[in-house]
Image (spheres, rainbow, N blue to C red):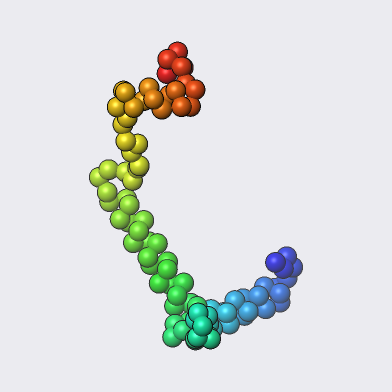
Length: 92
């Protein structure tokens, strides 16, 4: 990463970034060589940003939060598993 804050260096870095965004992605195809994608890197990043915004909106519009629930264990099963891991009744 270049840390030179001069105006000419910033302009040069902006030019390099713009060229990279204009390039088309080259994808390696298993046993098939390489394939040039139809979309530019900018178009792919723009699509990804849109997908991230949609996912954020979907998660914010849910009534219940996205959580994982642990399945409850029956008391008889818990005793067996407690013995297996060395948990005593006092520690429960």
